[in-house]
Amino acid sequence: MNLPELIAPIADDMKAVDAVIRGRLDSEVVLIRTIADYIIGAGGKRMRPAMVLMIARALGYQGDHHRLLAAVVEFIHTATLLHDDVVDESDLRRGRETANAMFGNAASVLVGDYLYSRSFEMMVEAGSMRIMQILSEATTIIAEGEVLQLLNVHDPDVSQERYLQVVRYKTAKLFEAAAQVGAVLAGATPEQEDAAAAYGRHIGTAFQLVDDVLDYSGDAHALGKNVGDDLREGKPTLPLIRVMETGTPAQRDLIRNAIQTGDADFAAVAQAIQATDALEHARQAADAEAEAARQALAGFPISVYQESLLEFCAFAVNRDR
Image (cartoon, rainbow, N blue to C red; front, side, top):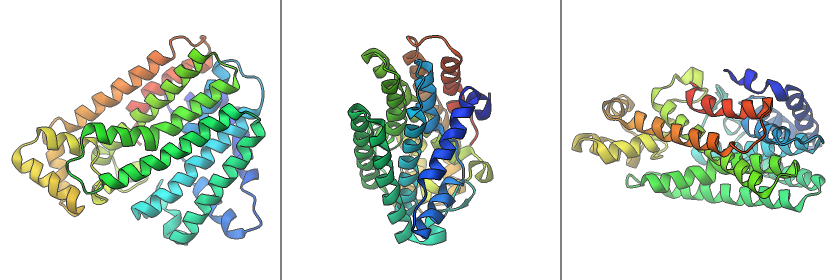
């Protein structure tokens, strides 16, 4: 099942979220509108806002604050992308130039700050201290994840545990918060709220682990990013860590040098990864996260929304971009 089919039950909500996003990007400062329009107009899967909408609907929510908060989640995500690309010195995202490549680092950082500020301004409108607590905590943890990742760069001795902590903080946390917000909006029981958070956390982790695999097996055009970017940035992702654990001395030396310098022969690194079980190991880890996400939904009422949430688990691990 492809993504448009998965989100069909919330198609009207997603259109409404797009309208909220466009309306709330309005600013008298032209450069803010230009850059925000540029990065949000690039598209993307919009998985995080979809998570807010789908969880809320699955638990019977009938109001309209889910659309506002889905837009908030997308603004937070977009702000992290703007800052990420500056930190990583990236020049390609979703198949086109990054905002920092187009407009410069300073403008990208400042517009990212604007989106964070706008998101907090918007979340107040929902009138829920619990939701503000969830989203403000999430932004703090995401920032901690960014710093943890920075500490891991060019370090070939990063363990799987340290790497997965970065994934949980930097990537999975916003999925977790999005799902949890949807549950809170719907007046969920504490058990349902915990289940929603677990679902989002596991789905987010699965997505990142599959991204790790695609970085060494995907097509650059399909992925909309430079295949091998993480290697060039000296980031020790799970396939590289696995080769360091199980490869031959020569393979380990190759990966160690690649992580330390970011300047190794990509073809040789890819060959070393293919020669070990690194990609299969990462895929199995992603499959385990997807299965944990499925299990988290066991207590949700059966509905078309719950069915789509279950299908998301397969989509997360079977995609090619």
